Image 1: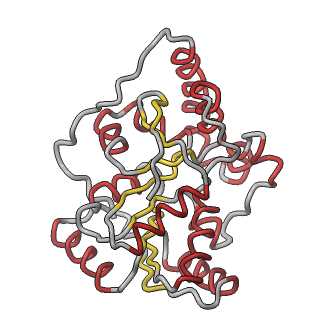
Image 2 (image 1 turned 135 degrees about the horizontal axis):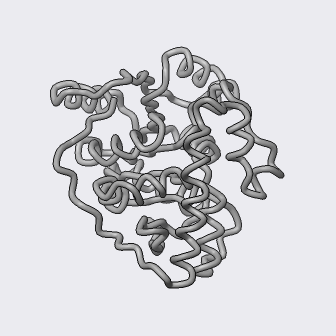
Length: 267
């Protein structure tokens, strides 16, 4: 089990953790049948917590929040001297965990996206990891669940024999999901960003040099302008401005949030 520190990034408590630490943590939780809620969080995810205090509460009650985006990693290094040499990118982490799960015989479960995307994911994963045990794959319902459906879904995941769960519902729905299911599943549940989209091959990965300079958002914007333009036009400048205020100590950001009044039950 890891012992890493959480650092305040605009009120969101992000863990100082790299791939090695994240993989070891998830593998420990999977082998010990420990319920753990984990999210790979980029700028959009951080800003979701900034603008919604109930969501901030959820994020700061997850067990681990990974620095998925380069701007998040850069800020940890700048303000807290974290010395992280790479971000903890959800799609790459998913592949690393699948490789370890294959080698150690741990079954995995995938929840979210569409059936066609899951089928493509299965094909691509088994091509690279033929011994990977996929305990189950279930597409999103693209609506809210009721209490009975939530209980039945948790039962299906538990009874599948899975040792870890990957959730791909889009941000912030997937973070809500792992928060609201955290007490029902005896396994690590990971909100892994765009992992399903990339592993299925629906969208190409940005070239490595683009990732390293923190411009993956622009690459993805060019691929999906109609879906992402509002996100990047508003959130990216706001993130930069608020980070400057926090860095200069002109504004502090309370990490406490507000306890959610009810469950959202995204499914």
